[in-house]
Image 1 (cartoon, one colour):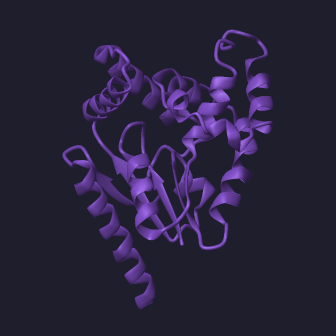
Image 2: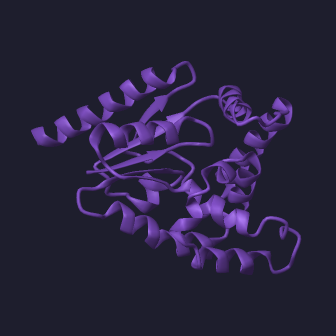
Amino acid sequence: MIIAVDGPAASGKGTLASGLARHYQLPHLDTGLLYRAVGQAVDGLEDDPEFEAAAIAAAQALDPSQLDNAEALTAARAGVMASKVAVIGPVREALFEFQRSFALQDGGAVLDGRDIGTRICPDADVKLFIRADSKARMERRARQLEQRGQRVDRYALYHQIEERDARDMANPHGGFYKADDAVLLDTTQLGIEAALQAAVAIVDEALASRNRV
């Protein structure tokens, strides 16, 4: 069983995907970490004429061990850099096979990101698109960072999220929008447990509907 979970930054898609993976005993891949790792590798080179070439090389050389430093990869700066390298077509191509191989392993998997249901796993058994308003997403990300002892400028963080959404929506290589057959789940007013219960219900109903066919 392949479960695709998409949505914008800080919508809760990663937390829900991780919870779904535990519930259904499936491996989980946060595909955003791939782009964050590439972005981290070329951080500081944004104004360099070789920025795109460096990002492509970093994507082609990406090793799974680079995903282990979750704290650094989930920092706000890593998210900004991820959105900058994600608009580079060859970067997305280099990371495509990694994601497909993970999804197609025996037994299936849960993947979350921006284009799982539209490009990486258009044949997924279940697709969810997680949404929340910008203010709620800013507050969630702020609390995450504060729990790590980081000081947070909420005004700046809010505008980072808005700017990243704008880049993602304009990205010709991405899949920021909901797949036609994905189920929308708005988590703006939901806590973690309530959102996970709602997500599990969506998956169970999709599986039940498939079995009735």
